[in-house]
Image 1 (cartoon, helix red, strand yellow):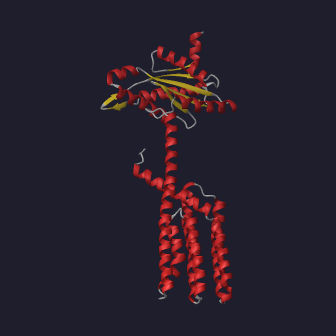
Image 2: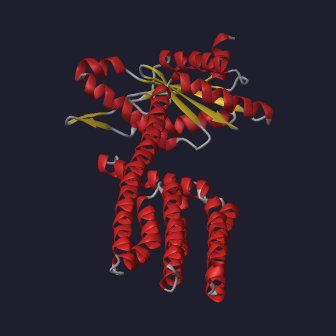
Amino acid sequence: MDTPSPQDDELDLAVRVRADQLHLLYQQSFPAIFLSVVVAAVLCQMLWDGGRHALLIGWLALIGAGGFMRWALFWLHRRRRPEGLQILDWERSYAVTLFITTSLWGLGVLWISIESTLVEQLVSFMFLLGMAAGAFSHYSARRYMVVGAMGSILLPTIGLFLLSGQSMKLSLGVAALLYMGLLVRASTVLSRAQGENFALTHRLSAAKQKAELMAQTDELTGLDNRRAFFARGQTLANYCQRNKLPLSIAMIDADYFKQINDQHGHAVGDAVLCGLADLLRRSLRKSDVCGRMGGEEFAILLPDTSLLEATELAERFCRAYEATPTSSGGIEVRNTVSVGVACDGYDIEQLLQSADEALYLAKAAGRNRVVSELNVEAALA
């Protein structure tokens, strides 16, 4: 299996941060839907005495339609409840409905302002500035959404002011551009800070998972270490006991391992252990639990497996390992294993002890063989 490169890790982290930011947007911006409609209604009420009732009603209806569209998106989001990276499929819909609504604000107020008095234009413009500040507070998690929302709200009227030729409107337009620039800069800083916070959270979580994995994994072979074997094994034993299923165990020991180390060196010895672990991993069922007990000893818990079935499995493994050479540094080593098998209740310690006694008998009988607890009982009889 290929190991992810640092570039791949950073790319994956960036995607996860983007997903977190979008989750935050959906959580915090729902009230903005209703706020937009309410503020538009207040502005229409303030401009009502100036006439153009049909224009105001039409614009308010469009704002209401945009708000309903946004509400439908949020309702569907809460109904579907996308989790993790699934939220990224909802980003385009969020951005499109947002920009439609903010464009209705910017173009609608521009349309109203063209034939309005100076006071009405100023009142409308103050509302736009407030809406731009609201966009900053609600959408700062995604910088392009802040910039797009503020631009579609403010730029139409700012353009009208800058092209008016009137000094006061020109000054207001320039001031509004500076105001918008400050908000954009602040949103950039805030968005970056939020992204770094999300990234740090993911890095800490990944480091915690890695530390937990290292605490449960044998560094050389990648199998469970003794501590993890007992923890997972006890859970498996409890399951078998509740369901009245047989539970067998096999203790495996690499034969003449010290001689391999002495003759070929520890690097070759490590390769032999890794080869043994790889073959164990390939031979196991998903329900089995396998671990390195220490040195050259390994153990396998076999749920819903009788003593006879476990012995047959161990026999097949012995023959497969004997036929599988290990190569390291140009040296090819063929080795064998001795196995002790037991099926003696659901206590992991007792199972290990029974299998260890069978393993001792297998080694005493010449190694490269499987001995079950029945053979031990017969030898003691």
